[in-house]
Amino acid sequence: MSDIGLHHVTAFSGPAARNRDFYTRILGLRLVKKTVNFDDPGTYHLYYGDETGRPGTILTFFPIAQAAPGRVGVGETQETAFVVPRTAIAAWLDRLAAHGVPHDVPVRAFGDTILRFTDPDGMALALVGTDAAGTAPTWTGSDLAPEHAIRGFHGVTLRLAETAPTAAILTEVFGFTEAGREGAAIRYAGTAGQGGFVTLHAAGEAPRGRQGAGSVHHIAFRAADDAAQAAMVAALTGKHGLAVTEQRDRQYFRSVYFREPGGVLFEIATDIPGFSVDEPVESLGTELKLPANLEPHRDRIAAVLPALA
Ligand code: ZN
Image 1: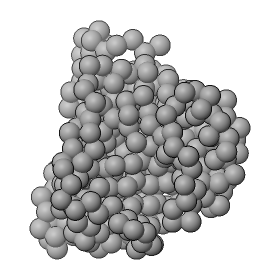
Image 2 (image 1 turned 180 degrees about the vertical axis):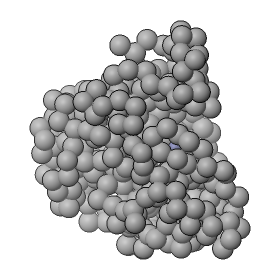
Image 3 (image 1 turned 45 degrees about the vertical axis):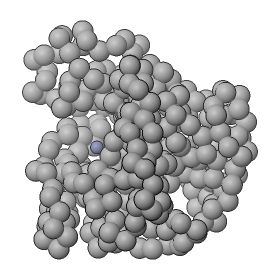
């Protein structure tokens, strides 16, 4: 049985080098995989996470140099949050200010301290300071003190016209339980120490957004293995009448996709095999990695990708 929580979050960004610099040098995440969008090999797919890219720590991007900025609307992920120890928030406030990162003053919600900020593409991010962030292993290759480093995801907030249909998927298919309500937000908790929270924000008949740089394309939930994933698919198609794609081999996990009732693209990704399947942990993210079917086209693919030294 896998932990209940997010596996990864995937978003669009602007230029690849700027994206890489922000997430590795300012946020202190590790680039754990440099590959391409398997469905569009002329575009990078960059994966950031902890030392090994454990499920619940992985934020991925499709960088498109000329992408127009997105605008968040209903049926989308409105915020992606990382977890840090509560005592680290003051240091992060200084760090974001020192790097000129736009941010708000910290606020309290659901008992946590939340520091909201945006990445260079305007993607809405937050650091959630909790007393439970604990001593989860993190990436020690950055200049951050270990006691300040990001521990992985806290969770995501989805902006929805109505929350009940999406909540049914979270609770009945994935096993989340309601953990609290504040204003128009309802929080659901899984069991994972990283990425264990999904908050649903009821926005009523608010306008739809526009996907672009800084927009989350989809969020992925964890399944321990193929059998666990198949059981979730059976519940989605049988009990909830939703259409789910066939399984796709994403090299580092195996995935199915579906549009949940609130309009957000959901994925279910297996915990296996993980990011060390095609390069050792020590050198994760250093080489351009391609799946076997794209390897014969390596030279042509590498020639169109922007430099990312
Ligand atoms: Zn994905």
